[in-house]
Image (cartoon, rainbow, N blue to C red; front, side, top):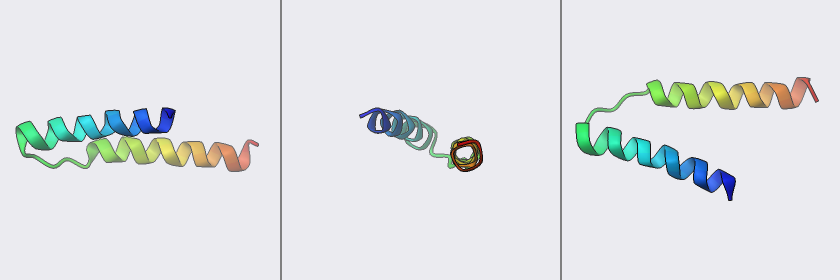
Length: 47
């Protein structure tokens, strides 16, 4: 359920970004990707 809420918040952010401004920015995706990479690194090497 927590993952669903996280993705819902990310989806709302993209809706605001693309809906109101019409601009596509990959900066938000970069932060999301860096966080996912950091978690995967910690799970693999710091387990």
